Length: 424
Image (cartoon, rainbow, N blue to C red; front, side, top):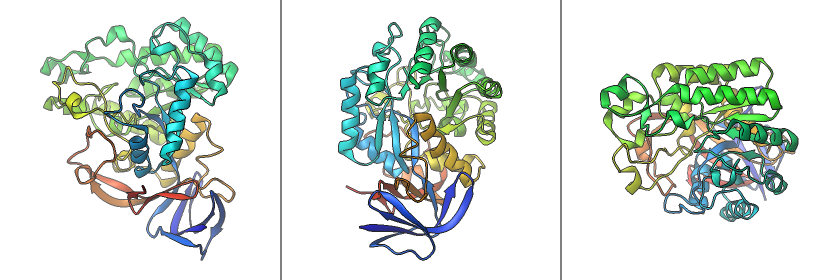
């Protein structure tokens, strides 16, 4: 059966063109005017993007299924326009073995709503003591390694990890946090934290590790990806690393682009996240870094928590926010970038970093896999009016008007989201 996407504006890295897209099976077979198929998807007034790729998704399964499952997280991803996600390894058990990695991947296949690519741990059980079996995990398809939630504190261990990264052709993705500087921290260290009497998380705790690992990258030649950059100083460190030609990439979350630490004056745990929301000066620096190419990718850091956990007092509640279904609307509302730049940061660059460019990120190109997102960039909506597919409800955007809504998501030629509704 053939499917035609009718009347959309096709977005690529070089610009936008108006054309129909004809899909036969799992491949794009023709791009042009007046195309017909057995089935039609209306894209009038919409942009046809390469399917989005999230480098940073917490699916919680195995071990935390009350917060999210791979199926519910995959459905949320599809509704957000994502055709692929990199699943973070802080599961229970952690993704430090071939068996757990295969389980996560197989559960993603079973759900059938987006491609799920498990990341692997840098250290066994993410404890920062012994390196994970990189060669074994690489052999079963892992291309991104991270202890996300924990930064690798031992510089000698991180040096060895980056040496393996160079040898195996994989990427070490670092959660940059010097933990001796953040113990008991609840929010950003600032005048606001002082006023509220809350322990602060200083920017230098992130920037020291960003700087350290860039220098280790310079020494080893191993690929380094900086997770959820949140400060002005980190942006400048990454900018200089790129000027120096180092194999360093970086991501930013929608919430760090849209929200600032003043929201914590409400004592609402929905705004607690790691790294914390920062100052408006940091927010503006992150936006500029996204616009000028210093920051390579939007990554959601989708972090579901059940209500009983997020409703604890602020100092006891776990950090994290939902992101998959809101990312496009948030970013398109707060950063002024072209559709082509949106395609780069939501799809093309993340697919390259995750090393899945053979399946994702190409967009509407004849012969490419039909993994596409059809988006109405002008549509406005409110987070509270959207029924999330996630099992959790920790959404920090309630009361805000978002701009940009996913209309259809196509995974290997199959519409997994049609007219904003996920297919069962």
